[in-house]
Structures are given as C-alpha cells and as structure tokens.
Amino acid sequence: MNYTVEINFKSSIATPLQSDTIFGHICWAVRYLNWDVVNKLADFLCQYDNGSPPLIISNGFPKGYLPKPVIPPVTQKELDKIVGKENRIEKSFKIKTIKKTEIIPRKTFAELQQDMTPVKLFEAMYEKDVYDSIINLKSKEQSVITQHNTIDRIKGSVREGALFSQEETYFSDDAGCFEVYLRTNYFNRDDLNKIFTYIGRDGFGKDKSTGKGAFNFDIKEGIEIIEAEKTNAFMTLSSFVPSKNDPVKGYYNLVHKYGKLGGHYAQGTQEALGNPFKVPLIMFSAGSVFFDDNYRSGKVYGSLLKNVHKNKDIRHYAYAFPIGINVNIEDNNEDI
Image (cartoon, rainbow, N blue to C red; front, side, top):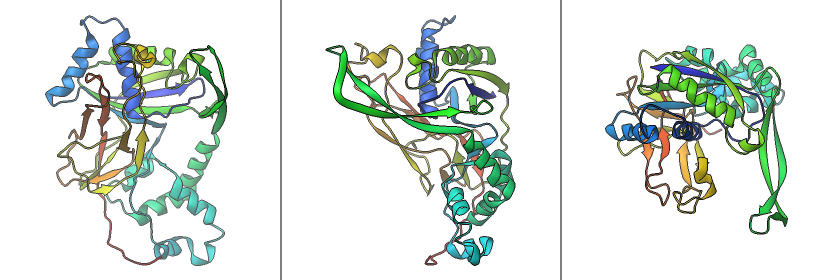
C-alpha cells in the first residue's frame, strides 16, 4: 500500500528529513509502543531478510516538490541560446540559483519525466512561475547557525573554550510542510498513525528533548507521482547505497553520514556496547539518477546495511525509493 505522510513542523528542526533518519525514528517508535505482537521491532526488521522490504520510505520534501534530477548541466552554448549571450551578466544570479537548487515542482517533474534532458530541465526551471515558486518557498525558511557550550559529563559543568556550532532551520507560519512517501505491506494506516503520533510528540532529530522537530501530520492513501510509460533509468527519492547487483551507472551527488544511535542506545548503554555512534557512511543523495533498462515499478534497490556498529544487530537503512524516468543525454565534448 502506498501512503503520503504530510508533516507540519511546529518548531525549528536541526536534522534534515532524510530517509535513514526517518526510518530510525520509526524503529524506535515501534520498539516503545504497545503492540499485539511480542517484540514487534524484531519481527519487522526480520522481514527485510526475506527479500521483500516491508517498508520503503522516501526523504521528506516540501509539499508539492521533489528533488531536482541530478543530470549533467546545460553547456555554455545551450545556455546562451536559452538566456541570450547578451544577458549572461544580468541573469547570472538566476542561472546560479537554478543550478544550485535541489528541488523541482512535482508538476514540472511529471512534465519532463518521459523525456528528461539537460536543456529541457533548465528551460523548465527558468520559467518565471517555476523559478518564482522556488524563490518564494526558500524565503519562508531560514537557516541559523547557533553556538553551544560543550558539557563535561564527568565534572557536570561547561567545558571552557569548547564551543560547537549547529545549524537549525526555522519556518514562517505558512511553511514547514513536508511530504514523506511510504510503500509498505507490513503497516496499515492505523499503525502509521500510531507511529507518527509518537514521533511527532517526541520530536525529530537533534535536540528533540528541547522541543525541536515537533510536528503535526496527516496520512493520505496513495502517492501523487506517476511512473513514466517508457523508462531507461530511475531517480531515487531517498538516500541510497546500492547493493551488490544494483546499477551504478548514472549521475549522482553524495551525502556523508555520521549516524548516531537513537532511543536509549544514544546514551551508550550496554546494548550499544558503550558506543552511540555508527561507522561513517557515504550515500547517494535523493535526486541521484541511475540507468536501468530493466526498471519496473516496485523493483528493489539497496539494502538494510550490516556491519555499521560493533553490535551486529544494528543496521542502517539504505534503500532507494525509485521513480522511473526516461533520460536522454547526448555526448557533448564542447569546451565551455
């Protein structure tokens, strides 16, 4: 069953809504809530070893948006045709913004999905309505870097001269709404309501004990994303690490993960063997594109990674949330 979870943050957040982090919060909610099944979390995680993931989850994206596909940029020659060589300087800020932005309206993505090219993608992003919508969205959130004192846990006091910085994102009153996509044959809608109620009250990510990451939510059946009729590739909507036989030819960005355990494991308890941190990982970011002529809806890419901690029972979520697309990239060796 497919679901869309619409999340409305009531506070600032200090942790991005990435699939592996969301999955960790879901696992701890399953662990702490009351269920009819004894050790529901163990039962849930065991399903991943049977070849059919019981839950596939995306990153969280601003409502109505998806990650911008990671494909090669337009060449300078193509850019001059679209913008006009005489407008290079005047339009430089807009061009740079389009190249740097990481999101695209879902409607625009659907229009390009059957024939994705660098030129068509840039032209679509250059359209006034599309560009203005992205600028308007970005104006409703603000990232602030705050300084914090480091606490000496042995002495119970502030460690002199040991400051660290942390980035937090604040939203205006009419912003802070995100969508997370789920595919599951394990949880029903009531289960998901139970889980996300727990997470929303407990908070998401860093400093949730101080009120950060609190949210309201609504769960809707279905996902407003269509599959392309003809595909030669897929775009992942989640952070992703390919498994042994997964395709790796494509275009991608990387995200470095320094995972920390959640729940009571975060305190370095006996089950965590005194270490609340996972080994560092490199993952492909949402928006990364990989070629696969054999793509089909429901095909599984990625895995629940092992050997990410000294406790071998601890895993890391690294499945793709794939959406089929048709990408056309011409070989172009033109010097810019």
